[in-house]
Length: 207
Image (cartoon, rainbow, N blue to C red):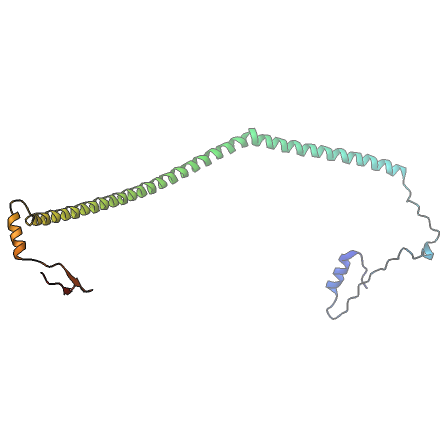
């Protein structure tokens, strides 16, 4: 049978017990507040254990020495910690740290310079491409304007030629009598009707 002392003994009993066995935890029951005092403890008076005066003096002295030693150790550790911190701030360690920081700064500046050069090259290429694209669009606009101007000129030339042809048929003082005679000799009837296809379907007779 296992002697139960705390939760660890119970866990150990569970681990060491065979699987086929039935575990029954040995738990000591507690008395309720209404239960009477055990018969074996009736009339018992708790008396503190006796203290040896000599032993008490020795314990006090040793405890004082212990406190003094621990105080000295704490001061020693604190002094060493402050000395190391001071050396890190102002001593050789500070110089080494400053040198490392300066070296790291130089490395970072070199990396920054390389990155700036790379970005500058990309920017130059991008600006060149944008400039070429802008020049191409500008040339296309100029070419389109020239084509439109040429078309306008051609249209104006056609209008001028047509106007020159129409001028030949204008009625002037010089050919007024001739045009009157031609109109009388060749009368035209404009009183007619047309269908949807534009053909003349009905026309009145000239009187």
